Image 1: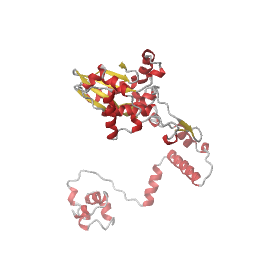
Image 2: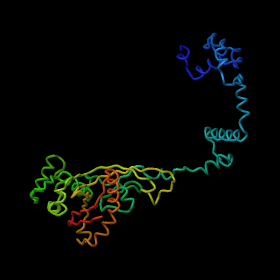
Image 3: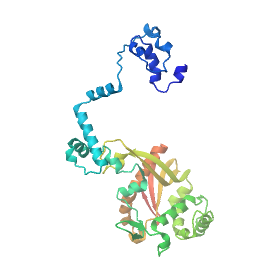
Image 4: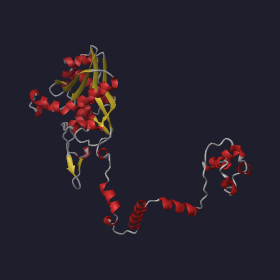
Length: 347
């Protein structure tokens, strides 16, 4: 037990057992180590009758071992090693590298390609919004830009902008924040005054700033909450707002037009669902949009519908797939509500 406890590497365990073997006479004839006690070295009868293994023991000096290794190395391996050393030496000395002087290395470098090349140019984590953009379904979010060095462009900081008006994207964020925190009381008398009180409450709770609150059009909220859809949400059996989720899909499915690898890579997808509600035992998915319908499409929903559907159908499809996969439920319909004009689209 003492010898085993004092072992520093695996040979300290194997050595004493091997020295006892009846075919290990060569080991007992030389002084291998002061660590092997005399009683172990002379105890060849301990394993003589029980040993079933057969050993052929050869003792080599360091030089003999080097020669043996060299002999077993093939000429091709020696050539490759020589070329590699020559290549490294040229690099160390700062000499020009002429690859045609080392043809094997040149061939290896020029012909080798990374087998998972697609994984280097595709993200392993994506948001639903980013995936929507990849499908050429950009949201209408104008932004001010200022050119810097070269061809790089950066958004102008708010404090440098002449206009303090919120961008379309910022207005959308404000509306979503309001719909997340507004009190959805089924018995409430929803009027413009009621909405204004709700806005003031969010300002006091520091969920909105005064500047952000100015971008909210109370009548749009009134129209929505008093509509059939709004009443269904206010009276829903269950309502989840700003529901965050994360799920995975195969990279080949996510990047179907650009993924070329055969590797079974996965992509982590995350997103936030505006509202998920249960009505008469069935589940419905709701997404709010603040797209400018009146000015862009002259308030004509027939002109807006094909554009809006193309823009958001992939987003709603991913939402539906995610919640059905995670919650194990079936979504009856996915609904898109446009605050500008109070238009409803079902998917």
